[in-house]
Image (cartoon, rainbow, N blue to C red):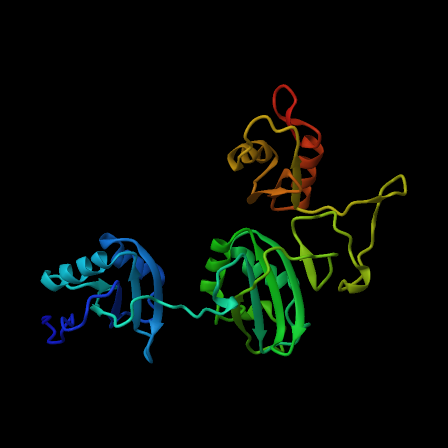
Length: 315
């Protein structure tokens, strides 16, 4: 019996490699469960936020003896199992494995499906969506559309870890009021994972953006306000300038890392973000500066030059 008068363990149950944990803090995370249990063995599955009060969970060890070891330890310990200072009550589960009936929206991926509740399609711009979600990492692509569920957006990150960070922080939250039109009193984000891994953005518009491809054609009829082409002194159209450079690295004989690119590109100004990725069999990188002018100077100075002596790693 624990000092609180409530039994911490039930000894009458048959041991199982699945443990039932009760009295957990509100919205206890999988990471917190693993942190509590990992000293006793390898965790192969968890099921969090179970029960009416969402304060129960199941943890499955890879081996029965590991589960027995955890139960035995806390049964004889003067210090109870705790998460966030709350005593956790542990018992064997009557199940022998955890079956997570996860919908596709619960399986982590690098693309998020965001439903923006309480707004019309024109109330939230793609720039606002990008501003909110890029706080968690580089946003590769965004596509917005309207469905029966309301105004939605697909947002592609580099990896599932970055997408998960954004989802955990923003799901159920509101877009800051100052980013919304005056007539919108509130809006909420409902976020799940998408089955997509790479969005197919055919052109830049107010409904879709590909931040990895500055050369993607613009759909003038779909832009909010027609974009006038930039014309050079010779009368030829020039590519639109951006504060983000796309660098294609050719003839790679030596490793090119984020640190190497930072050293090269920071010579021209403050580098805010760098992302390296493989595309079409080659290595590319996105380098973000605070303004267009700095990016233009770096582009003019570095385009066609080599990172290493001897003609290696041509930019």
